Every structure is written in C-alpha cells, then in structure tokens.
Length: 151
Image (cartoon, rainbow, N blue to C red):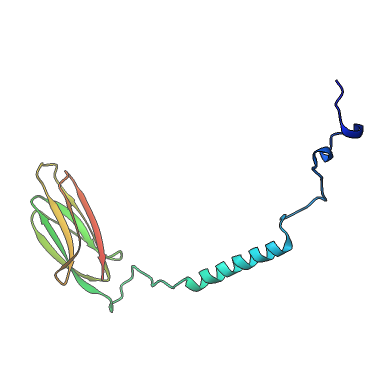
C-alpha cells in the first residue's frame, strides 16, 4: 500500500500545519516576559530579606531575664527525674510530694514513675509567681512526663 502524501512529499509535519522553526536553546520565553519574571523574583527576594528579623539566641543564661521557677512534683509512688536548663540539670528522686526551685531563663523537667503498680499517679508542674506555666500527669506504669517553660 502506498501512502498518500501531498505532492508525494515525505511526511515532515508540514501537511498538518506544523512547522519547524529555528532550533532554540535555553528558556523559550519572550524577552519582555523574561524581564518581568526576573523583576518579580527580585522583588520577592527584597521583600523576604527585609522581613527577616534577628531572633535572639535561646538556651543561654541571661541573668537579666532569669526568673525563679518552682518544680512541683505530686505523686503517690516512687519517682525520679531531672530539672533545670540545657546547661545544668539536677537529678532528684522521691516517693511523695516535693518542691524544687531553680533560677533560669528556660527550665525543663522530665520525671518518671519507678513502679508498675496500678493506681499510681505522677503530676509535675512548673510554676512562676503562683501561676502554673506547664503541667503534665501520668498514671501509666513507668510513665514519663516532660515539660518546659520560659521566663
């Protein structure tokens, strides 16, 4: 069977209206659109650069911002834990309610129940000026609470 092409030409795409133009490299965007795109990108970068704020460094001891926190541990079973800052943690243990004071800018506390008994409770709170900033409770065997607060 012989293919039926216009004027017996090889199928080059010209009979369907498709034409091959000169070979292009890089972006196939007209110069005015490319210029507008570059302008928009530069404008976006400029806006982003002016909106960047310097965030103060955290995790360091600044005596002018330090506050006195009370770590309240309430429990009906034995427990152990640590409290303090990233630079200085104090490890403690007990079997009843306890209160610990620490002066820091940021304070963290991690406590764990030491038994697998049923009906045990451990509640830890971080308090500043009679205001509870964070609190967590666990009743799980060997349950863990972890909390933090800042001045």
